[in-house]
Image 1 (cartoon, rainbow, N blue to C red):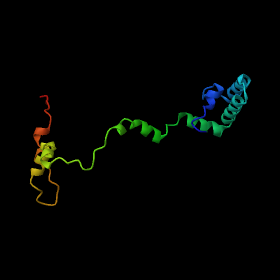
Image 2: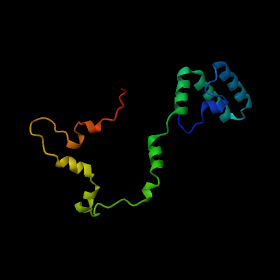
Image 3: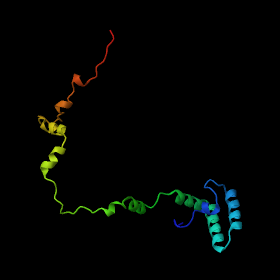
Image 4: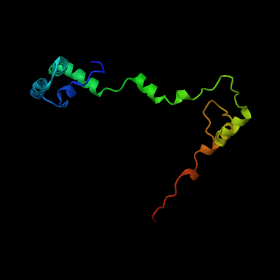
Amino acid sequence: MPAAEPSPYAVLGITPAATPPEVHAAYERALAAATGTVAREACTTAYLHLRNTGRRLGADILEYAAPDPSTTAREAFAGVTNEPLPTPDAATPPIATLIPLRRPTTANDHREPPPTDSTFATPTRFAAGADVLPEVDIPI
């Protein structure tokens, strides 16, 4: 069912939790209140959708389905499209300005001596020692 059509639940004035007898009663009420051929056809179409279990499941899925991703993305980025995009000719910053962005601890890790054998070398500041253990009070 296209998204432009109203929900069959809204046409009949019921909730998705309505039982088949409630759907039938709502159909009769809506049909009696309908004036004109278009309104009667809408009531009949809604009733046929909700009377059939497979069609009702389809109506439920469409009722609670997520919106179309392309529309959602277009709405999410609506304000961004007004901003000019950077040109590829924009100058990249010199490397000297990017060096302070490195963490000093990373630089210290790279200053550690390389492993002498084929095992992994743990940097000195991460080496196991008693200074990393919390103090524990031992009762006497």
